Amino acid sequence: NDLYVTLERGEFEKGGKSVARNVEVTVYLLGGDGQLLKVRTVAGCHVFPVNIN
Image (cartoon, rainbow, N blue to C red):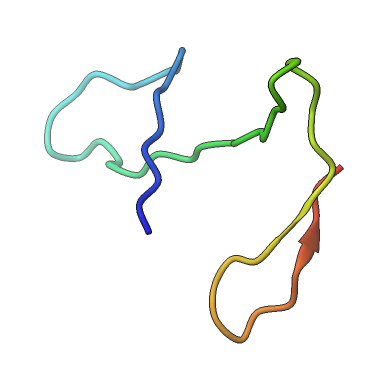
């Protein structure tokens, strides 16, 4: 399974090789009406489900 994410905005540091290359993303799952869906998700195998409020 693939997940493609479009970043709408962000704050990134300009710099050389010493700048961190990690990106933290918060993802919201919305229904067709734009309302936040209350679902359970699993981060991977052998991991307990997490409620998303």
